[in-house]
Amino acid sequence: MITVKNLTKSFGTRTLWRNLNLTVPAGRMLALVGASGSGKTTLLNCIGLLERPSSGHILFDNTDLTRLGPGGRRRFRRDKLGYLFQDYALIDNATVKANLDVARRRGTRPDYARILERVGLAGRENEKVHYLSGGEQQRVALARLMVKQPTLVLADEPTGALDSANSAMVVNVLREMSEQGCAVVIATHNDGVRDACDLVFDVHEQREL
Image (cartoon, rainbow, N blue to C red; front, side, top):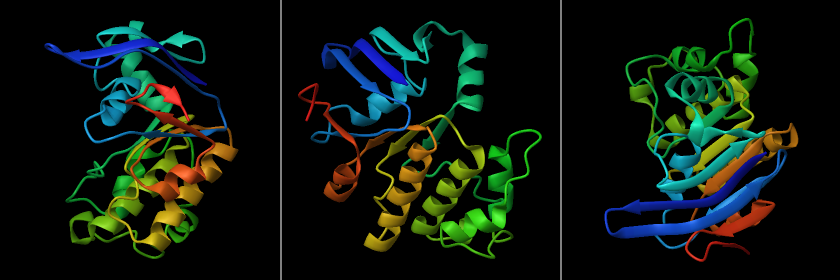
């Protein structure tokens, strides 16, 4: 479970949100919605410890993430967190398999063939990422999440570069991960993604819809 308590984020004299509160239980999917500029990506980045909030607390399974030192933040991102970035965050000059290897937990042997088939990239382990289309790269990033098996997934517009069929596949995979006990938070403008989630939170209005 991820719980955000009285979170405030300011940039100079501009405050994105003040005393924001939300909770995402394990096994649930929450959509962050709101107009561009309302701070959806910034909220994801604060939860993912990529940015620091101005004040407030972020709790994950009763651990206050805002109080972690550098080592604790690294361990949280390594052991608990999966992030689906808008820019994919892949190693461009490496193969698909090498990108999946980065996410593999020590001592595990994920079934890469099954995972790549699930995301529509069967048999493409040895292709270099920089030869893939944007939509294919997003599916590699999704496969990487499946390899890592995190307990918290943060996804920033995960269907932005995909057609409707692949968008549905991404949402279905995220749903499967949530059904396995993962808490999933998705920033989206897509009504279909929003409707597929269990919970919807308007960042601008700071309330659940």
